[in-house]
Image (spheres, rainbow, N blue to C red):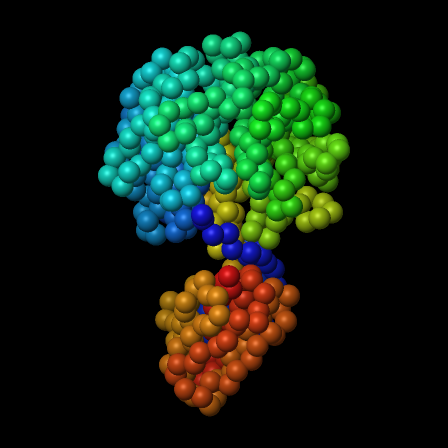
Length: 463
């Protein structure tokens, strides 16, 4: 299984050191930065879906309009975005692309497959080629809103979709190792569904959130109890009709749903997040009170457990905005509307080191795919080009090694937590020292070294 590091998004202040002119005297502005080039896809990219490999590489799947609308997956290799296998590898046009990694680390993609009568297809990358998982077009009929996820209990891929053969009601199927089989009844909802989103509880129960066509397009969530699909709380629990439902689980196992609420239907949509408290669906803060005109909502949890939501922000010409809930209020992560232009199909995910990433179709760059991340590290921590100290391994569990070219006996090393409190200090007596960190809680720590060459800073992750 993919490791999840308990890492905090952090904010702290650091002091200036006059001998280092490259070091800023105030924290750098928190900034959204491009991952590689903006607009890196060959042409227009729709239905962008972002996921991280177990090794921490960001991958993006999308409908590739420059390649007849077929599916393409790209990854960032540290320098450039490169194709994973061939571009346009699907049999035909691929819509509603949904990307996920298997527990063994293989990328999988689900989509509505125009090459197979618009039925559902799932493919995986075997290291050389994209190959079908079971039969292509396994749903046997037209689908919409495919959503892919892996069950943590049996490690099998599941796909939820709106089932055109069954009046667009919800259907969920799983791959049993040989064939795709139904999970519960086919078309288990009472009415047609839109904007399907599939996620698993920590115990392995599949949940689906959707826009409920039988309840004036309000939000509904159902779960599979082992025999039947049952409502989680009330059906149509949202206060307003919704669009762009997106489901995720918080660290305590509670389901959360983000959506765009039509407060002044059908003209004004605002970003909203709700969670199920065991009895009722309740608002998480009051995003809607901010009057944010929103579309393409996507929710994810930081490694520390805060909910983040990304969306196309029509208060900022449809550019991307990300907000986080701090326990009391929703606050912007960096600037609102940080993308170059309108951002469609926003997809939010966290890197293993704790930074939020957003993939989207980038109007400011010809509707091509762009990925940005939030750089919450201060200038000088990662940015110094001529480093005179390094630390490893990173992440670490029990010990870190610090190597420095500074003069020994005159160099002071301190390790700070995210509240700027020193948790360890050491005087450097040789070029290589080993520091025991086994007593530290897991998270992100900052290492500050002051010596004959000035000051330099680094960071490491304690697992």
